[in-house]
Length: 90
Image (cartoon, rainbow, N blue to C red):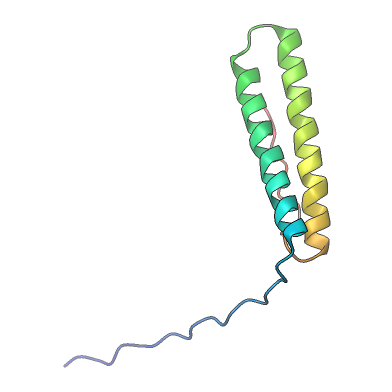
């Protein structure tokens, strides 16, 4: 004896955000800043000169702050989630 498969409700469509090229551009800029910060952190972890490490870390933090500013702007318009938990560096 087999039972009938249970059908689960299918989630409905999410509210659509109007196709605004400016918003897409801002999302790309935010992603670029976050990717650049990750690369700068990687370079800092491989550097041996303490002065260079400090500069690379500072530049990475600047990129993360700019990405957070863009994210806040997009979140206010309902396009991005709010600020993620802050990551600490070793």
